[in-house]
Length: 49
Image (cartoon, rainbow, N blue to C red; front, side):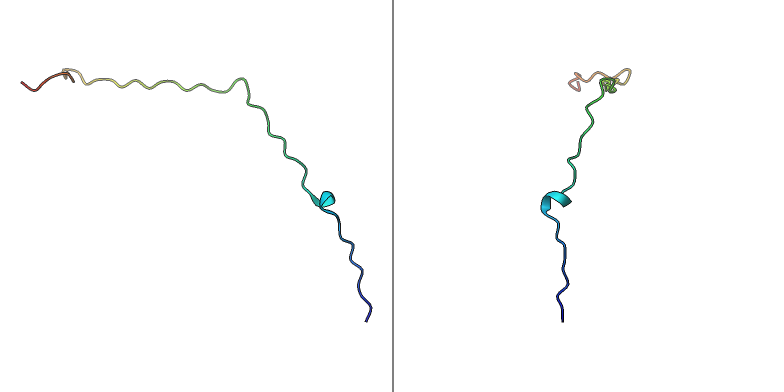
């Protein structure tokens, strides 16, 4: 029985191309600070007396 010839590619031939990541866009959105509103008529510094 004759052996089948297999053509093996070297690792450089089958390696994936390097991925190029896009640069961060200069117009990226900025996050706003969320301020908490205190309930009207309530004082957090009240000592309970």
